[in-house]
Image (cartoon, rainbow, N blue to C red; front, side, top):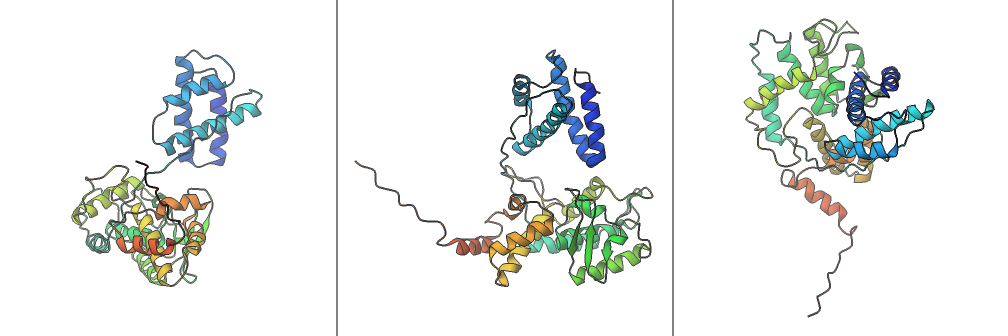
Amino acid sequence: MFKSVLATEMISFLELRRINVKPQTVIHDTTTLVSLDFYLVEHCYHEKRLSEDILDAWIPTLSGKSKTLKEKIIVIRNFVKYLNAMGYQSFLPNIPKAKSDYIPYIYSDDELESIFHHADNLDVKSANASPYLALKIPMLIRILFGCGTRHGETLALQRKDIDFKACTILLRETKSMKERLIPVHETLIIILERYCLALGIMFSPDAYLFPGLYPGRPCTKRYMTGWFVEVLRRANIDQREKGRYERGACLHCFRHVFVLKCMQQLEAAGHPVDLNDLLLPTYLGHECLLDTDKYMRFSGAQIPESLEAFETFTAGLIPKVEVPYEEE
């Protein structure tokens, strides 16, 4: 895979990463290092270290959004730290600032009602359909909508992760590799209990909540996304006409809807916005408020009442700037 002067070090670095990070992260690290390795070979670089000059020349060749570039630089920084620890003094590049212009798709109440209707009445005729697929799709959507969990960590749930008495869900396979216990509304717990009984997994603690086509494996994100696209089609929610930076309707959008609904309910109950900021990052599994910030962005055209409420909250906080008249 690697052919440059640092091939051996790259392989050793990835072996260490496999012990400490998720397989998906290792794949991402590998892709970045392959790019660097190819560049080193192409430019006949033979130093047993990464100099400032070679990194300054390679980094501008990277493509992708600012967040993607930041993630790639972080991979190289980790590799540089490994090289330095091995005695190959290398240059540590700065982490670039990543800006997010991403605009999430926020399902309206009418769209949500239509999605639930078509998910509950999904007619599965495919010969390759996963067993109990007609039950899995509605259940997955309800968990994403009611808990704001990520798509992947939801599909990784097992029966033992659901505590019906305490009304909680334990998320083990998380993005940050940190388990978190989240409270769940009793109405969702009731649906989950009936779902587990219907699938016959109530007394099988290691059974996946969303068993896949192969024994002992959960449904894949790609598989469930494909069927959700069919739900959107039947709900007449067009995904093709997307503006710049817009993601379009998808399963991940339920996480944004969850945050918005939480804000609306907390504000309606008289809780200040700063309290929301303290509660939501912990529930969502974010390590800082900045990670939650992008989930609190939405179009004022879609949610005008929420935008008006936010403007009312900020009234008087931002001073008015008087623009002086120009001299004639």
